[in-house]
Length: 419
Image 1 (cartoon, helix red, strand yellow):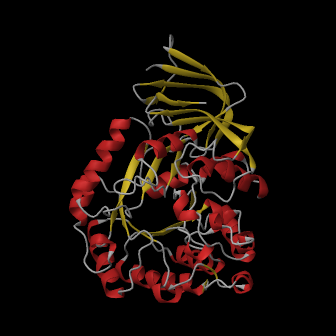
Image 2 (cartoon, one colour; image 1 turned 180 degrees about the vertical axis):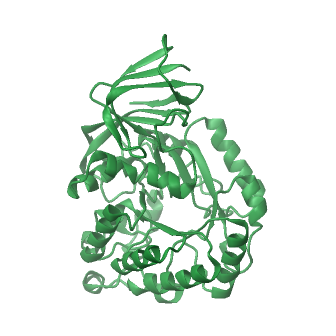
Image 3 (cartoon, helix red, strand yellow; image 1 turned 90 degrees about the horizontal axis):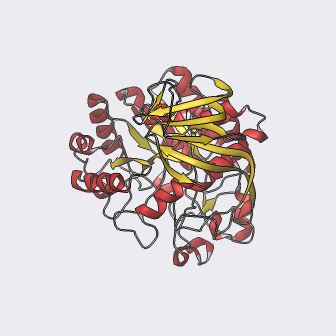
């Protein structure tokens, strides 16, 4: 479709553009100006930005459809302005075979909605013992390899995995946590967990594992992305690693920018997350690190959970929170709190995330994919189970009023969502 978006405030963090004007779309790409478009969208009062890119969104297929379906979560993504998303391999069965990856990509393509980028399993069945056939999984469409939240306690297996990945240029995405130090823990090891009688996970469970992987990166020069940092110590280690020039990047989950262990209140199971909500000091360090660029980008860590999984005592509740539809309003809230420009705020979920994912979207340049989100930065959104399109209604932000409402989402030049 030949489409024109008129009178928008165009923000392209990749180029630094921020001004009012028109955008033109033809053949699925952003185009030069042309006459006689087939459709005109009047975007007066709206921001036109690159479609948002989410580096961690669990779609729950295959195998976990009772928690959510590909269709429901793709609809939630579009309602949140997310046009590209990476899905971790911890499905059932895990994404450790080319056939499973191919099936997921075909299902996603048939829905003609957001772009789905599968992350392949690093080890067979995520058991941490044997490496998967990474080359075959890459051919099937995997863009990186990960253990998701599954532990990989055997350091030699991890060393071999990074050696192999470095040889062929495969990116490895890891969430670092010492499996033995975290064993049995459900909350940050601090005063709140002690008062509530919850088994704790110390902050050094993350930094010890992170320091180990950084040593392996020095030895192998593998390209590693660290997922969902949660501690101030991890931010410091990443700052030093980047100064050293190691081929590393990292992200933070959106919930960890706004919440801390104090928000557990009286055992709120919606605050049961992996990694756990840490101290106020950790939260503030993550926020500063994201502002400075030590932390590259922010993700929703979207993890829909059914009511049976959440309506339990805190220590027995299934970890995770829904986040696709909250990525924009919570990112805007972070930007306002840090007094950042809208362009710099949006960079963390567009251009910076695109660089980590290695895709050509996340920008509004001529010839770039026409993945565009039009949103009203001032319009309020009340978070409730009725307003969430995701099948998972589990979020610590239920009842909150947040600013930032998506009005239109375009993928490859097609209007796939309209409020």
